[in-house]
Amino acid sequence: QKEILGDDFSFDDIMNLAYNSQKPVPVRFKNDKYVSINGTDVSIEKLSYNPFKPYEIKIDSTYIYPSPFPSPFDIQIGSENTTIELSIHRIPNNSLKTMAFQSDDSKCISLVYYLNPEEHFFSMTMNISIEKAISVQEIIDAIEVYNAFIDGKGKIFSSVIDTQLETSNANRYDEEALEFWKKVKEIENRLDVCFDPHGSKLEFEDICDIEEIFQNIVNKTPIRRNTKINTITSKWEPSKDDIAYDTLGKPIYFEFDGRSSFVLFGKKLELPCI
View (cartoon, rainbow, N blue to C red):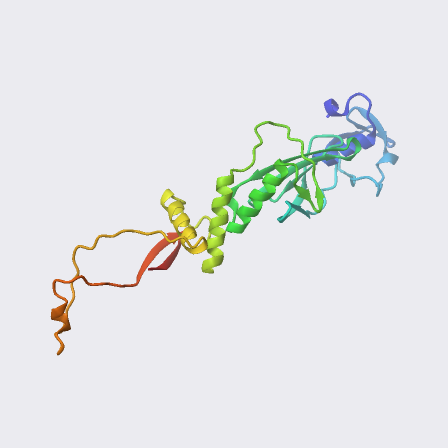
């Protein structure tokens, strides 16, 4: 702790560090008037509770314990067209003045940020974990918000955050992947279904099926499959007008209804063919 506090520190500095790191402070009672904290003698009178300080002092025979962090709170992050609400909780940080916060990591998009109001410092790390999404829309929203922050257009509540990237490796999320999930969402809307993004392992054949369905249903661009029929078996009953016999050796026009079956994200779909 002395490496962080330096040589010139106050009792409040010690307790701020203890609170920020959520670590107890070793103490040693010297007499009825002083305790030794980090090698510094502190008057017991200073240990009285101060409601304006971010800690509550609880003393046993060897430690002073900081009060726990407050309950989680919600924030909104977003892009121009999308808003995501995240639950944020404070996490321990071994620093005197810089506070650390983290979102619920069960979401498709998560973040960790550091804040030092005195130095006007704010730093944030954002991650996308597609495997944690519970809907197609959640994936689309996460990618759009992530890309907005990469572009310096991301929002916290209604304020645009002017992002300055700390690494050259921070790139926009793959646009082709975003377009793919948008197509899946459009198919959901047209067919009135709801896909589980992890209902089954996504294979290359599934990607092809999604593209085919999208072109047929959304873009109204039918995909033609040429099938050569070698034999047809049918039972014809002779009639009085001998129509059946008149058709022998002549071209015949057939029209029939067919259906194509697909299994996408664990959900079976049957679509009509012309």
